[in-house]
Image (tube, rainbow, N blue to C red; front, side, top):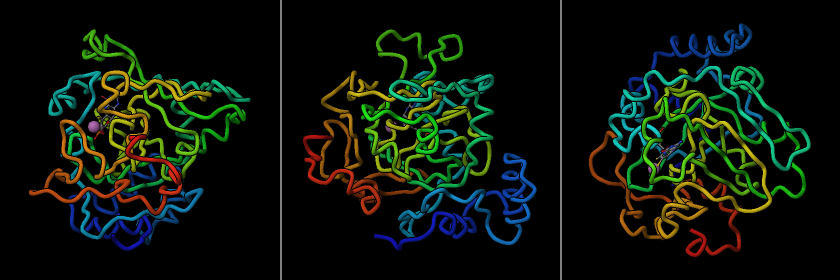
Length: 314
Ligand SMILES: Nc1nc2c(c(=O)[nH]1)N[C@H]1C(S)=C(S)[C@@H](COP(=O)(O)O)O[C@H]1N2
Ligand SMILES: [Mo]
């Protein structure tokens, strides 16, 4: 596996070989988001850590990984509320309204909250996280997200001892999202995590990518990213986060429980009835590469599954 490197360093090294924004533009964009003159100064000479991460931001990014282009990340999307056609999500989501937007955080918590998206952006400064995203259909990307750790928001609401799982619910607005008129699916799109998975420092809520605002097609204004799980766990357009006692039902698990388990950890050793899991196609590249156990994040998150049979708990 690759060398252990800081996320920030990883992205700056990769930057020179991609069409990433020039460093100057990136710094400008980051400053714009944060409105922080101090941060701008601090970022002047090195590639900008936009804020100090609350916990170690290290991650394994094998040196052969290159950032997927902005073009590909924003024009090849899964977002069934708009369309199952990956190449049409961007145009259908073009006028999606991301403001005003409220996120309700409740359930088994001591301090229930409803935050406007602008409160979220100002309360939880974002940092860059470069993560691999592996879709269960057999393709993958490397994405420079902007976001903050989910545990920051969870600590604010003070989970009760009885809370064991988190349920994420996303927007259900058929007027804006044409796919919602398809009666077959158990709308709204929902997802879930075990509380310890949600608290892990690799789990983020993303509000941007490539140093820019999060594009609508990628889940604006707020989207979950859990890099060691298949892409469908990363719910887009979140409006509600609930702490619950029991494992919650989820969208894909409800549709086809034999194909999509609750855990859905990336695992080349657990076959899928329709798609290859041993190898993947990196978008923008030719050929296929081996899929890594836990998407290459085993060192960081493997302990969450100690003693669990990951073939049974797929
Ligand atoms: N609300 C919602 N979130 C969703 C989906 C969706 O259809 N609706 N698709 C998922 C799937 S299958 C994948 S692979 C990722 C794709 O994210 P991207 O388009 O930003 O690459 O989003 C996930 N989040
Ligand atoms: Mo996916």
